[in-house]
Image (cartoon, rainbow, N blue to C red):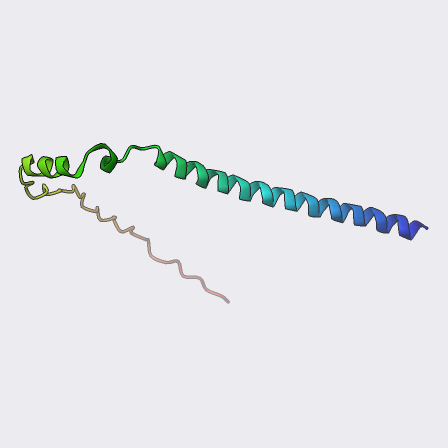
Amino acid sequence: MLFQALLSTALAGGLYLLLLFVLCAAGVIGFKYAQLWLRKNKEGQKPKESEQKPAEEKKQDAEKKPAESKPKAVYYIVEKKRARTKPSYSEPKKIKFE
């Protein structure tokens, strides 16, 4: 009788643990899908240029723009590494074992 009670309690605990794992996994997966869905919808709300302007207007705009020059050079400021001063050690002590 005692063995059956302990077994049923352990079984109930195991089922509870399994249920908790499934709920947590479903929550994480659902959250990831919700993020993905929101990201897709956010991108879809942006107006596209192709819908705003007909193809002919694009060609005219392209002709009006002056030819773009070469991109400007990018310069980086690089600091020279400072050499570390080498530590000077004293003479090693001589240990005699007698």
